[in-house]
Image 1 (cartoon, rainbow, N blue to C red):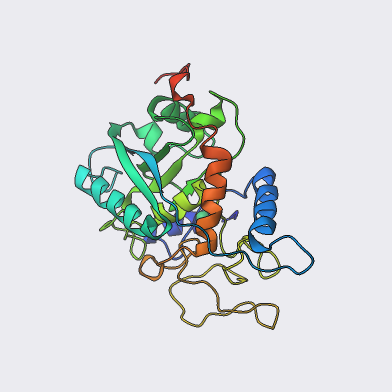
Image 2 (image 1 turned 45 degrees about the vertical axis):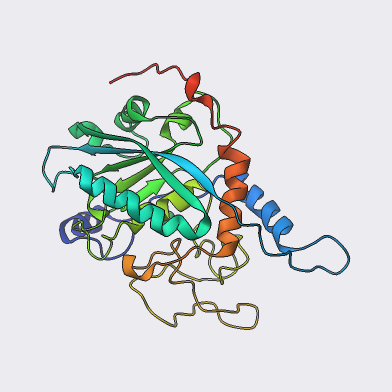
Length: 299
Ligand SMILES: [Zn+2]
């Protein structure tokens, strides 16, 4: 999902808080979309002349090492600083939200770094790359989250899994950036229950927005109903894709929509299957490079 806002609009959002959820995650890589199409076909039907839905997925669990980095402009609550208690609360919400999928995060590292240039760095900037080359921990199967101020009215952004080269910039940039005031009890009402991190980490696992591509597009997961537009607020009964070919209401309670935090409560079984498919495809085989990474650019 890409946004093109005028500077005036951007400044207004920054001044007045966020009127809509704004995730800055870029469109999925073509490689990932192709893989999702393949997995969708594999998951939905059994082989044979009469296609039948597959059986219920086998229950699964997965522990993911987690590293949380708080990067702030200065040590005040409006310049990006959060306390260790805030970090723990965010960690707790992630584990609660992902519990039905079987995913458990294991918080290995917490860092706090005061650096104005890093804290305010934009995506794709040299400062962002330097920050992540310095702070990123673990392999491609380790989740690194940078909790910091984000400019442009963004709540967060994340990288999708893909085939990468060991030690490349893409490796170091892998992870999620989350607006500091979206943590539980933060100032960005109604996005302050910590579910921005849950949404972004969904992308890290390879999940798309439920509204991706509109009614005729979709997120390539079978059990999330078609959705024509991103949701704002929590409009019960919203149904943007009507007709026999589009059963079900919009999945406004799904973590991969744009609803208010209190409205977001679920990943579907189909999303759960998909996140493991993508994890096994990309994160596990590329997950142990941490022993061989050479850091060439230190702050
Ligand atoms: Zn998103």
